[in-house]
Image (cartoon, rainbow, N blue to C red; front, side):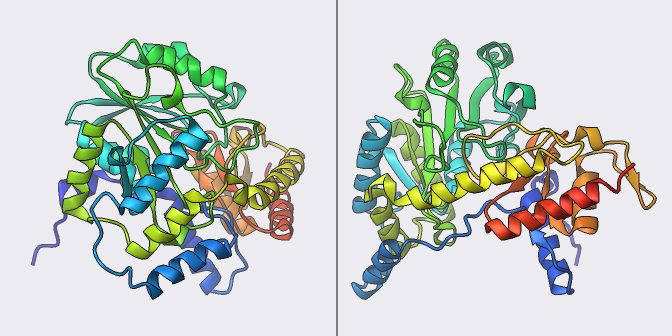
Length: 398
């Protein structure tokens, strides 16, 4: 038999975050004391009230197929949540729930992008954006940013990237991996550019909405004239510590929601019925249910930022959301230890896991190769030890 995989598969890269997490697990299994700060997963348990909702659904025998875009209850709950928290008028038939926000993103891209269409990705971007665009045959167009811009694009750069081939823009706020948050004014400025281009749609990835250290979350679709041009993606994984439950959702113009339902109907159908019940309970809750987790992340951000700022060769901005630091480590390029020279961020990430036994992720996977991503979704004690190890390893370089 010929062991031949498809050309599509061969075009795709493995998720860098998953690859580094796997390496960390393998080292741990071999007896190495590795601190893994590579995956984007809250280290908290799902709130009891949400777990109970899942248990109640099982006991009520809610164990059968549901409509492909989700149960009436969860779509109604999400519709009310969008109105309550974001000022967005998405009717239930404009909402599709999926097996994670990643599937929501894939549904939209596969529904809107033809081979040769251009998709604008402000960098840094979440690792899967580029790979999903490749699946659809689209052409990723990267807009680079730097730490000095707080890793956010300006309206002029966005305008310059749009042409007659542009079909889609994908960005996140709060951002994975940078933690940057677009303010209301910055969001309005982006909307001013996009309103001029009727052929361009935008995915606003708001999965980290509840992990936001600013006073207000800004949804692009809430800007005047934007709701018919924007697909708003969110989910319960990050804000409610429900990563393993696997549920994301999107609000979109009705014709896009119908297209995504068609796509999903051929791939997975609806998410787990029990998950939908627990997720409906989550979005029906007051957002303050996430406050204790938010406070812990803010405390950790402050401590990690203060401690890492003392490590030579590491430059930091102050992220205003999510649970990542995205330091510029380009000052370490060209330095060596033990016969190994660090030429890029992949080398730095490998050096840190091998020498410091701390797993991070190269910024190259996020389109910003001068950086690494460090998750602070771990206990205060673990994070303090991770910084101590990183500092000791970096000081060995010369």
